[in-house]
Image (spheres, rainbow, N blue to C red):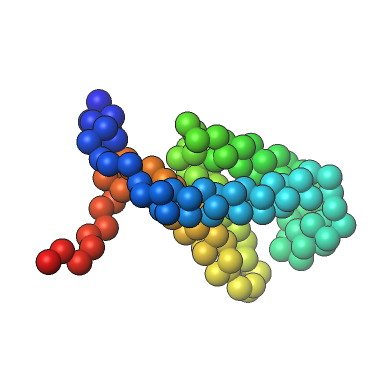
Length: 137
């Protein structure tokens, strides 16, 4: 009930914040869908990249399916927060794997930030939970 009260008492995002949030969401969804589908169809470049990271070939499709499901959940407005949590878990695994093989891991971190920024810009309840104070004079 308290979360619903927070949502109802918080004003809607500005038009520019809402549009920016949706643009970031669309770009993230497109990239994630592309990555998931390439893993599911066992694209040669996806398989080579996964092998370089030490992921067995027989597990690549399963990883792609997990990413596809999380992305679909993130793309649906009513379940976007759950999808963002699942994608954050996925990206945390990517950071762990890339750290283990001494590869740069900034991309999954930046991508995870973009996932949450897009929701922060669109969803008043998130702004209520994590208020960012502006210059109040």
